[in-house]
Image 1 (cartoon, rainbow, N blue to C red):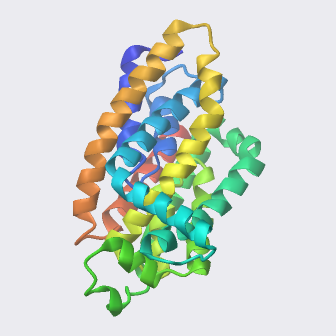
Image 2 (cartoon, rainbow, N blue to C red; image 1 turned 120 degrees about the vertical axis):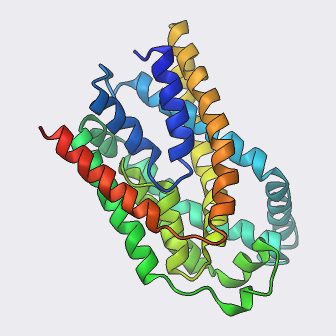
Length: 286
């Protein structure tokens, strides 16, 4: 069972690391193991706690981009009504997001139970975190330069809709499947995929954040009833406290990252994941 202090720490940690490309799930497993917290990280309660904090992050992302989501949803409905896939930028972006969501959604449904077995081994998670760093580093090396046609377009959605094809969106979505393994970052995987298909850092981050909302939201809808079916008021209280902390940290993370990726790269995050993952693996193997 988590204490209130542990719930605050894990909530803040999740809110930061979910949106930074450094794996929130990886940190939520590694940090308690290093600190020696007596937590059963494969228990239904702990998984529900993580889902609650993820849901809080999803809510923040939806709040931050609610005007964009209103336009995107309206665009999708408009395209369905006129039976044309790409009547405008909002509809095009909406269908690209749907396509990008499918691979991780299917993989998560099929392999959820198998992946959960890695939760009980922080050493595996630390190794995956180090590999996440290598993935981010390779993405910077292999990335395609963003098409010049997007340089003169001020609206980010227009740039994404103009540069990204349905097949490329599916590739970005497939990269997110890696994030089913604790230690690999969902944001980092989607960012890496975006860079590799030619998006600029800023646009790859935006597309990643938009992709995150339906995926995290769907997972929360499926798993949160497990938490609230519990008769233990303390369990619910710690989860709500952790979710509130995650929401606050997520809000500031979004604002910081949207500024950062206008001019910077994934390299610092790659180095952090490689070093922290490798060091954690050494500590946990002792």
